[in-house]
Image 1 (tube, one colour):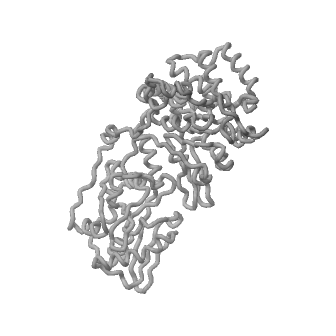
Image 2: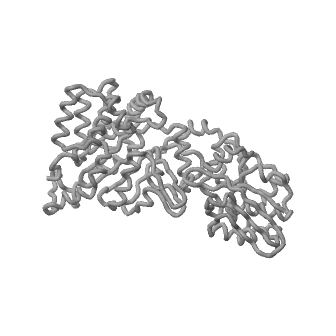
Image 3: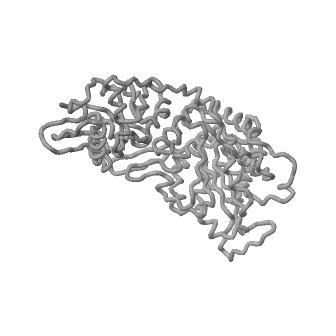
Length: 511
């Protein structure tokens, strides 16, 4: 007897329906075909133990399991449940005609209980797209799948519950979640606040500009000046996620298995990988390509602390994603694209000892050491960072000042207002939402400056030796400063402020 059940395979951030065909014929062997990995081939032992403990029998005849289409590689133990149900139906131990109405996924333990799986959200989206009535999956994943409406989400805790559901012995109410209500009542999880930072008004201003325009920032200063503290507070002033952004972000975290507790992500991600990270872990990849840190930072912030300590190859692989806001991972048989629209916040010391240009402490680095240290960060990468900010130590008077600093709640409305201006400006462009995302041809049209501003910019470019890319960055930042000020035109003071945020381009900055 031939039985068909349906599962799903995830490639990148998208899912593909897998047809699992089971046939029981004369013979004694068990075969799984259709490009399965070792975890799937080992399913025979898990399924056999679970069937025996639950009072069923493993057919002592030839069992062939085909996973179609055969040219897509299937990985992981999440196919245990659909294979087990297929075997039971093909051997006439399961009496139902509804197997074909559902996508079924779940990893089984030896006693038949189900363990959670990853990539549930894209699987549920694809199931709805292909017209399945519902999806049957482990209880721990149900809330995540229920984000997708018009799809019956049937949470089960064991293989036995799934069997009882199909045979009508147990009624399981589909889980329903009001996604918009859940999203609107989600609490911002950021506990860090800009009010905690005493002094550093110029750095707060730079981060406000960065948040308003989606710009990348590098902070350079001595240890203890507050670089990390400031970076960790940046997400608290970013605009809240839109519903579309929340779904995109949740999808990526689901595929990576990083979705703690299921449900919809409501806060912008903040990722801070250690400087020992590999290029594959940062950008993504592996045998079965998985999203890296830059994709997990999609619609959020990627913070690289102590930038020169990262391996050169790790930093250089970020150049293309910073420009294109996506990363493409190519293999011999497949090419997968992950979104990577993130804000890069980097920090670094000015030299190995950390005290070059310090107002009080003396730098002990030898001749040429400072420049060698700064050269660890390549010029092309610095070109892609819009704002270069020097962070100076906070004085004792600033630390002990009683004057209350601006809170994140005070700053965020200004950022929101500037972002709304940009949303209106780019409403006709589906892939552009902020000034930082403007392509070069658009910069010429939108970031027009006066003759006086052109003269100022020409002088700055000649003195600083700026590249054409840095020229575009200055105009984009000036446009954001004008948006924060609520002016239609880029005025000369906006341009002057944008130019001062290119400190690392200054010739002889390191002496």
